[in-house]
Amino acid sequence: MLLAIDSGNSNIVFAVFGDSGEMLGEWRAATNSSRTADEFGVWLERLMDRDGIDRTNIDAAIIATVVPDNLIHLQTLCIKYFDCKALVVGGDLDLGIKIAIDRPEEAGADRLCNAVAAADEFEGPLLILDFGTATTFDVVDEEGNYRGGVIYPGINLSLEALHMGAAQLPRVAIKKPPQVIGTTTVTAMQSGIFWGHVSMIEGMVTRISKEFGKPMKVIATGGLAALFNKATDAIDLCDDDLTLKGLLAIHRRNHPSAQTAQTAPQAH
Image (cartoon, rainbow, N blue to C red; front, side, top):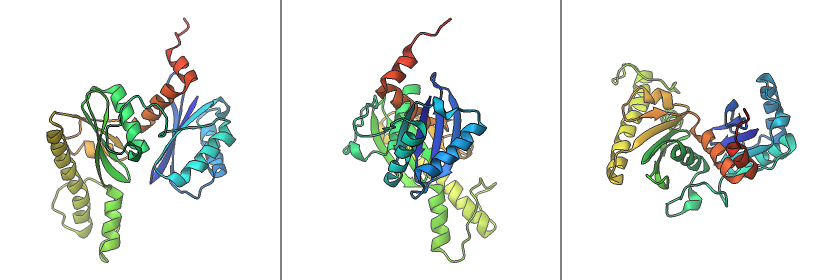
């Protein structure tokens, strides 16, 4: 079994995949660079036990992180608790796609995982919209090559900036307001954040597609993807597990035993 770890700026997502690629479990923790391998290990052991997953069956791991300080703790976790050395997205790994940007080494590991998964599953050109700490747009062309994209402040960052920058503005929950014109401070803030983000998405999808020169299938992922999908026709479909699917695909491409398991004929 494979342990896949997606370490983002706000959350770390852990998932276990069976040998045939089915997801057996998924768990999320707040990102904290001071959390040790032992803290992760004890926490994961309990969750896996609760969900009926035997951790001793995990024999491989892969990590994508945009928080460098977390990497050593996650690598130690894999060695100490699962007795395996994790692959790390980046460096010399074969992604199966060309990173066609000016500085390929700057591409975020999570964005590359999204591109790999989308290229495997859909015909391009594609525009991947990821709702994370930042809201990102990533372009994948017809040949599956990663062509760059856009980074925009995410919803939570925008809300925190409003609260911190204006003395009389409170923290508010993210929700879809029933109307654009707010009649209280809270509803006005919610409308600005939500409908402003929708307008940004619709405008950026239009501009990116026009600049690219072809219509693009827009795939949304991330925790808030489903909420925004219901508010605009600019998004074609949602896949909450796109990054994890990318980790699985990259591991299979770079781990000989995984490739063998993937292609081996099934017994009858």
